Length: 105
Length: 417
Image 1: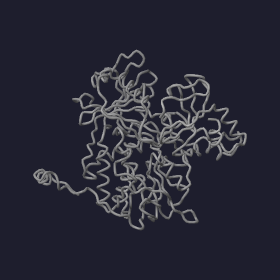
Image 2: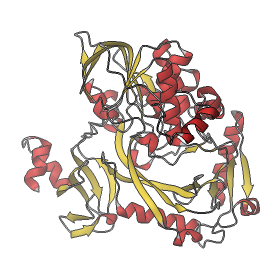
Image 3: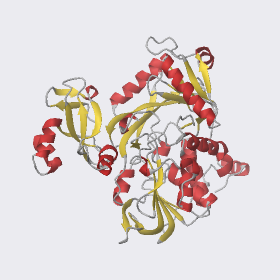
């Protein structure tokens, strides 16, 4: 795992400043969505071996949620994006969330 | 392979060059009754109990590395049954009882040492929580003792009792807990399974699961070709999502790396297993003299069997804050293992939506102590198609049914369990 994370707001910072929430890709269902949708959102994970997107909270800095794209086998960090920007890019119908993350890197 | 005193003498005089391999190295057959994917502790014990207790011997255990190369050889060897919840405690106590008879059962020295496991507490609230846990244990017929500060001081005078922030106020002791020699556990089960006709196939990686049109599993694609089976059992903790994906399963699991450490050999100093209630630090001393210890996972998802230096620092800071005398001890080795972190911190031993596919996963970092019961209960499930009584709560569908077994009360946040 890289020792430094490049926060889009604070620059290059030690990774101990961040708190890790988990998979950034599950989308919160509507409040009245069926139980199956909520079960999938809260409990089920793709848990991919390879490139993943993870929510990192910059608690020791700007306190923004970030989306860190990284390889969980080689531990390379590929991109870091503000979570709001990441989500807007994904919602704007670009070519999938994965592509959105790469465009913003 | 059997051992005798005469053998030892004979081998000693011939330079120990004529020992035979402990298990065969068979080529896979075309078809088995049961294929177990994963030759770790749980896969091997499942094969052993299937053969010994349930009379199924036409079994293959497929291991992508070699026997003992995964987490069964990467843990801190602690065995205990000091859980709070109804879903966990009888299961882990079943495991503890199997540990107590294991060496006689598989006739192999696993160096099971019931040296006592103590969980230290550092505040009044924590004492009350531990008293509650001790009472819950006793309700299930398990030994538990709540020790006060002076009783703990007699047992382990080297602790930092007067730490300004986290003074040691006492501890919850399970005397029957302790340690076992992790490699010997793998070897003992492997030998026992092999003797009963189980094929242990090493360096055989499963690359796919072949199913018929109705969805039933026909067999597995492997690096040694296709192997057919009637029943397929996954015991691939660490990589469960990867093997589950081959059958289209999406699971309540995230994979994380946990590190462990061993120091240079010291004279006997730590006679029990100690866990630090203010952190997540745990330590014991191996029979070779090395201090074996660990703490939290690295928090980020990882399939790499190596960890981060920040976690090394954090672990050793916790250790020194509990036992100041550790500050000059040299660390000899550190290593990492990847584990299934489940959504409630408890494991899964269950059938799946696919008729003849069985799942054993989600062990978080508590898999080693469960090795005997996990294998026994999984074998029971595979052989009889119904859960063993003590594992009946460890269901795959417990999350959607609102029956999570969340020992730590941390919610669906896998890196916090």
